[in-house]
Amino acid sequence: MLQENKLNVCLHSDSINDVVRQDKEVIDVLLQCSELKEFDFIATTTNSAVLTQLSSEIAQLRYEDKGEGRFVAHKQKKGIDQGWAGFHDAMPSSFFTHVFGYKEKSNEFQKIKNAFHDVLAFEAISRLNGEISLFVTQYSPLLKKSVWIQRRFNLKIVSFVQALEYMDLDLKRQNVYYVKPKVRETDGRAFHYWSLLRYLVPHFKEAWKVAVFGKSAIPNEPKITDTLSGLADRLQNALCASDRIAMEYMKQPINSTEWEILYHFNYFCLLATGVFDALAWLTVHRYSIPIRGVFDVSIRIKDSKSRGTKFVKAISQKNAQLASFIKKNQDLIKLFYPMRHSAQHREPVGGTLFEDVNEGWAASLVRIKNDALTAIQKIDTQKHPFSDWGSLNTWANLLEPYRFTRKGLRELLTFSNEYLNYLDFPSLITSPELNKEIASKSSKPIETCFIAKVYWKRDSNLPILFRTTH
Image (cartoon, rainbow, N blue to C red; front, side, top):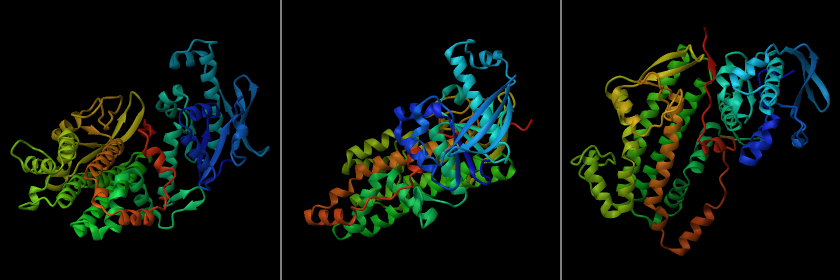
C-alpha cells in the first residue's frame, strides 16, 4: 500500500509531456523529489511512452474495469503488486456534460472521464492509510474544479508547481531542508533562508561580497555591512513568517491555526516596513547623505512637505534614477504601513474562520481596517474568490493571509533587488586587483534550496485546500 507517515504524490502521467514542453525545470525537480524518503510517488497509467522515462522507484497506478461501474485499482512497483483497492464509478454521463460542459462522445468528454477514473483510483488506494494525498496534474478542467472535487473526494488537486510548494512546506514542517536530492542542509532553517535570499535577490549577493571582501576600500563600511545584515535578517524572517503562515494554511482551519497565522501575519507586516527602512539607511551610508535625525530617513512620501519628500529629494541629488524608482513605487511602499501601525500602536490584525457554504470551501482569514484595504486596492487585481493580494471579493475587509504574504514577498524581493541594483555597490571597487580578489573569494556557486527556488520564481499559489465542515 501507500506508505504511512509519508506524503502520497500521484503524477497524472498524461500531463507530464505538457509540462516538459512548457517548463522542463518544474518536472525535472518534481521527479528529483521522488528520490526523497519523505514522499511516496505513484504515476497513473498512460498510452504515452512517458512511463518508461520515470524512475523505477516511482510506483504505477493501474486499474481494471470489472463492469457495471466497478473497478479495482492496483499499486505496482517493478512489476510487483503492492496492494489493491476497489472503487465504484457511479457518475452518469450527464455529470460530465453538466459540470464540465463537454458533449457526450467528444474527445474532451472521454478525456475528462479517464482523468476522473485516475482520480478515483488514486483516492481508493490512498484512502486506506488516511494520509494526505496530492493528485498532481496540469489538466485544466481538473484544476479549475479542484474545490468541487475536494468536496467529494479525500485528496488535493494541485498543479506541478503547486505540488513543489506543498512538498517543500511539508518537509519544513518536519524541520527537513534539502540542498539537492539526498543532500540535507546541515544547518537546517538558518542556511536554507540565507541561501534562498541570495538566490532570489542576486544584487544583495553582489553588495554583500563587496562589503565583506572589499571593506578596506569602501567608505562607511561598518555601517553599510551592519545595515546590509539587517536587511538580510528582515527578508529572511519575512520568508520564514510567510512559510509558517503557509504551513498553517495547509491544515484544517480551526482556532489554533488561526492564532498561529495571526501571530506570524502581524510580525510579517512589521518586517515589511523594516525592509524599506533598511534600504533608506543603506542609501544614507552609500552616498554619505547628511541627516539631522533618524526620523528624517524615510522613502515613504506622505505629502509634498513630508520628511520622505525631503529625503527622496536629497537622494535625487546623488542618484536621480533611484529617486525616480522610489517615487514610482510609492503605492507598494505605503501598502504595509496601515497594518504595521495597527499592530504597533492600536490593535493587531484580528481573524476569522470563514466558510463559503455555496462553493464549499473553508479558510482562515484576517480582518483589516479600511485604511489597509484602501492601500491594497490601489495596486490589486480582482479575481475569484481571492484577488492577487488575497482580498475576498464578497467581503471587502477580509484578507487571505497566505496569498497576501506570498504576493507581498515577491513584490518586496523584486523591489529590494532593483533598489540594490541602483545603489550599485560594485562600482565602489575601482582597483582591478581588488576586483579580481573579490571575484576569486566569492566564485564558489551558492548551494540553493532546490525545491523552493523553483516555485518562488513562479507566480503561483496553493489552491484552496479545505472543504466546509457542513
